[in-house]
Amino acid sequence: MKPTVRTFILFGLVALLIVGTGILQGWDLALVILNMGLVSAIMSLGVNLQWGIAGLFNVGVMGFVALGGLAVVLTSVAPVPDAWSAGGLRAIGALVLGAAVMTATVLAWKRTRNKWLVIAILIVGFVLYRMVRDPAVDAIEAVDPAGTGFLGGLGLPVVFSWFVGGLLAAGAAWIIGKTALGLRSDYLAIATLGISEIIIAILKNEEWLSRGVKNVNGLPRPVPREIDLQTDPGFIEKAASFGLDPVSASTLYVKISYGLMFAAVLIVLLVLAQLALNSPWGRMMRAIRDNEVSARAMGKDVTFRHLQVFVLGSAICGIAGAMMTTLDGLLIPTSYQPLRYTFLIWVMVIVGGSGNNLGAVLGGFLIWFLWVQVEVLGPSFMTALTQPLPDGSFLKEHLRDSVQHMRLLTMGVILLVVLRFSPRGLLPER
Image (cartoon, one colour):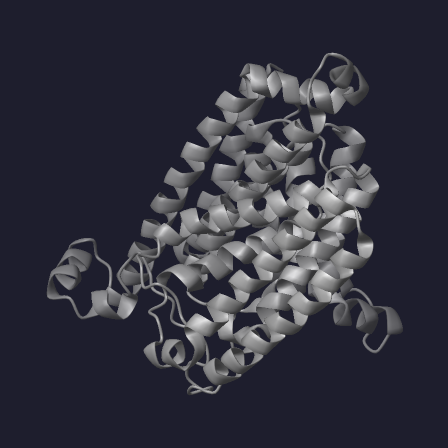
């Protein structure tokens, strides 16, 4: 079968699955799957850029997605004037001081190679940093801790935070890449996993910045709220012309609006990724991936190129993280789990076809569809499967009690089946 025909058939199959969900289980669930499928496809594009095209084994995807979520808070939430008055400028000054200490440390090491001088700068700098930071943070977190207790954001339109999320993730990736990209692939994986956990720990514990485990609710939205639409006479009249009640119509309207916005972002990123893949830069990256030694012998700066693609891929994950937090309308630092935001994204890329941008997008939609549907249909399937077993049997009780693990089991089975019969993914790299 020709690759183009195969691509159309597989995307058509995914479209049929989503439409079938709308017809059989309701359009609300179908649009939920579609919207998160779009976000997942963007995350897969970022990982595919790093792994599929450049061969970088990044298992810290969760950290970059979380930075995108933090960007939504820092960009779109209204500032808290009392918190800023209590210690906002001092907290920002502490961050600047910390950055200055790190810069001075690096410069001192490069120019003198004197480890005692470096240690002295670090100790003195750390003490000064804590002297400035701790009182400022305590003052900020003491301002209405039940309602705010943090600085808030800049109060800008929430869509702007998607770009900020990309920039924030790109900046973090640049710092990580400068220190970790020289490592072997297995060590790079461990380093990125550890750094992503550090990012999550910062989100959980730096309450003055992200409100920590208290979460940030009621984030600004780029689309109207359902309750506002339901009281709008013009919208009620329009909904009635389609035979819909205001509640159902407002829910569908909001979800479709999100879907159109996310689809526009995905199309733009996909076009850019395809142009990059087919450009001389893309061919060079694949040559580096396939034979790094030969690429170095040809005069290519492999480390710099790895840094480029690592930053680009992480920025895309940051954009997706910001879009996801916008869709949820709240930031919950404890919800970022490696299983959901790293393992599942890797399954999407592998099943779809690493090295193929369309494959990554396909994997994003397909795996997210199955992830949701297994949760919905899993209990019914397990009940039907164990029905022939006698009541009270150990096996029946054990299987029914283990139904919450069906998602992981299903993902593992899908991964094994695809790797067995189509090792390069459903849409292999051309």
